[in-house]
Image (cartoon, rainbow, N blue to C red; front, top):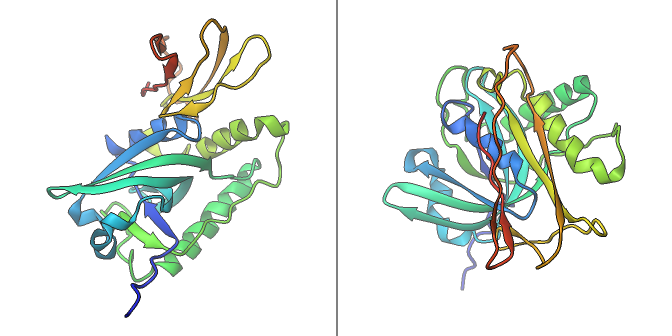
Length: 256
């Protein structure tokens, strides 16, 4: 009895930095690890081998790579885990759990070299898959299997260990700041929710924070505009939605 061939280690999901799809990056980076998010791609953008194995992707490791369509440069963004993948008509849906943000170096010139190195190695590894990655042109596929793993590590943390994820978030935004789509775009990061009494973090379960009854909490949110062109910015309100019946807090973010 013959065994089925082993699938590659990763699924790579490649959104383009174009309106409106590129604005999904705000949400992808806003949520803490453990939250779930989703992509959908028309059939033409999904690798044939992946289409043929769509039912075998549950709990498959994956990572998200942003593609600047203008320059054809790839920017690895975040690791994730496929929780569910299915096809409805000609649309493929990928539900995934967010993991670690790519760990770009805090020194910008070194992060730039990391991006160049990733593009060189990723393109060489997949030269038979993405040979049509050309500036100002569409590329296919945008969803594919891969055995290539990004090896990007920050050797120059400037903060304390507990601030590691915050610095990762700022560094990845610094890495993509010159993509025109993100000029004057406000990024929001929901850092954590902690108890006022002893600073214990609220756990994440079922895509929400679980809160205790009769407990006071502090909510930390970061805001950052990677590249400001306009001198004036308009203030806006942020609204949090707490479901008192189940004691959960549902996080949300939105474009500026």
